[in-house]
Amino acid sequence: MLALAAPLSASAHVRVDPGQADAGSYATLTFKVPNESATAGTVQLVVDLPTDTPFTSVSYEPLPGWTTEVTTSTLPSPVEVGDATVTEAPTSVTWTADPGVQVAPGQFERFVISAGAVPDTGSVLLPAHQHYSDGTVVDWADETPASGEEPEHPAPVLYVNDAPPADAHGSSHDAGADTASDEAAVTTTSSSGDSGTVALALGIGGLALGAVALVLSVVALTRRPRTSAEGTVTGR
Image 1 (cartoon, helix red, strand yellow):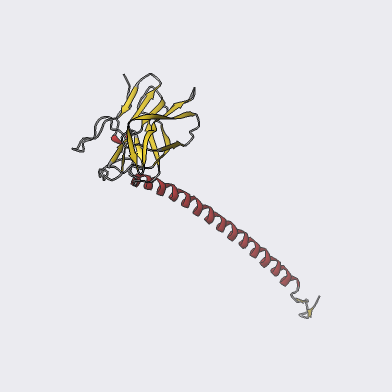
Image 2 (cartoon, helix red, strand yellow; image 1 turned 90 degrees about the horizontal axis):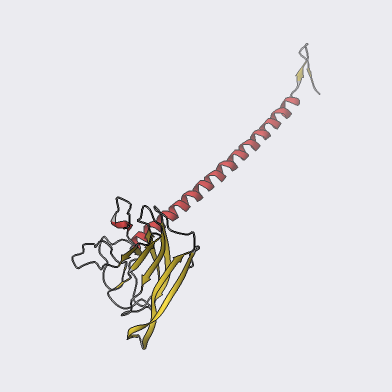
């Protein structure tokens, strides 16, 4: 049985980001997968793609240490997509860790695909199957009921025409917050660097002015008239 780290919050579930996309668009979808085991690592992730409202094109972002495979299958029934009849489509994406690689306890990993065209439908269920090094598999495949109460293992959902729940995780809002934080960090670093440069320039300028003042003082002293013991002014 899978040993889970405690306590676990709902935010630790497998999510897709962004959680919403426009029909007809090509969306970059990121599956954020936390390791919820205290003793085993995540070594494989399988994401099921829809067959009733299929994506006609799916590609993946290479992930170092992982082998990725997009499986294309014959659909249970032909589907009309625009003016075309689609009989085959991508039906799953599988990421498998290379030997010695895993998402260890206390870590998470991001798995990224580009999928399109986004079907003109309410929402797209994207069940994910998380495989652990001890042989345990956690199926993130439960559909959220109409009551809105989140099940134990909710499936990642991409909302299209339907509005996502107000408290849905993995939304584009969350992604924006992460991006804003990153930008703020970059801005802070840049500002600090600029301030240091200005301070250094001012310091060098101050030293230069001090040196000039010292030279002028020496020149002034050497050219100052000298008075003899009898009070007569003598020049150099």
